[in-house]
Length: 331
Image 1 (cartoon, helix red, strand yellow):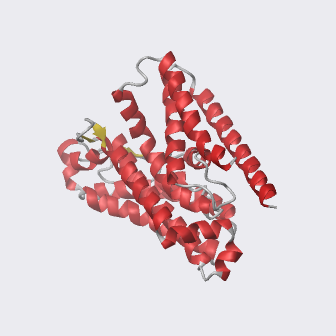
Image 2: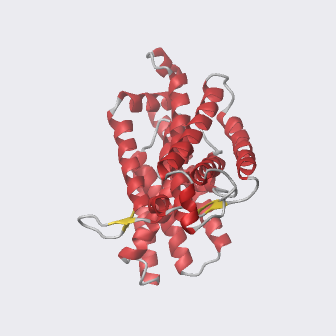
Image 3: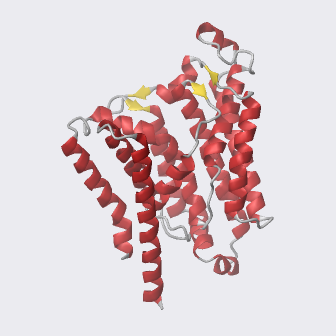
C-alpha cells in the first residue's frame, strides 16, 4: 500500500498526459510542455518550501499573501518608490538594479517566515491559526506598501528572470523560471535525503516526542521550515513580478490551495514524516498539466477549480487510508 501511495501521482500524471494528448494534438509539443513548466514554476518553488513544513506536520496558509507582499516590496525597491510606479521605457533606469529588488523580496519572505516560525515553535500557537492570521496581515501590508495600486514597468535585466529563455545542450528556449525551479527542487531533495537536517525534519514530523528524546531540537527545526518557505515565497514573488512586468496586490490569491494540493497529491502526508520533493514536483506538474489541458480544451476556469479540489480531496482521503493501514499493519 505504501508503494501504491508513492506511485499513485506519477501513474495519474501519465494517464492525464495521454488523455490530453489524444484530445489535443498540440498538447505534447515541446513549446507547450515548456510553457507548462514556466507556468508551474512559481507554485512549484513555494511547494518545495511547503514540503518541509508539511513534513513536520505543519501547514502554511499565508504563502499567497506573502508572495504578494514580497513581490510588492521588491518592485518598490526596483522603482525606488511609488513616484515612478508606472514608468516605462528609459524612465525605469532611474530605479535600483534587479539584484537589490531580489534581495528585498527574499528579506521580506525570510523575516515574515521567521516571525511565523517563532510564533509556532516558541509561543506554541497552532500553525493553522498563525498562518491564517498571516494570510490577512500580509495582504493588508501589501495594500499599505503599494498604496492599493500595482507597480509596473521594469527594465530588461529585471524582466529576464521572468521572461528570459536559455538554450541548453539538449533543449532550446527553456524558460529561466523553470530552470530555477528545477535547481531549487534538486537542492531541496538532496538536503532532505542526504543531510542530518533532512533526517531531523522527517523525525520531527514522524514523532516529535521521540525526536526530542533523541536530542533533536524540534523547535529549531519547526522554526527553520517556515523560514525556508518564506525564502521560497520571496524568490517566487520576484520571478512572478518579472514575468508579468507588474507587482499586484492581488497576486497569489488562492495560491495556497494549489501549493498544498501539489504537496499532498505528491504523496507527502498531512500527518508529517512521510513524503519528499520528487513527489511534490510530480504533484505540481500534474496540476499544471490539468490546468493547461483544460484550457486547451476550452473548459471554463471554474471547472478547473472543481477538478483541482476533487483531486486534492481524493489525495487526502487516500493518504488517510494509507496511514490507517500502515498503523494497523504495524499493530
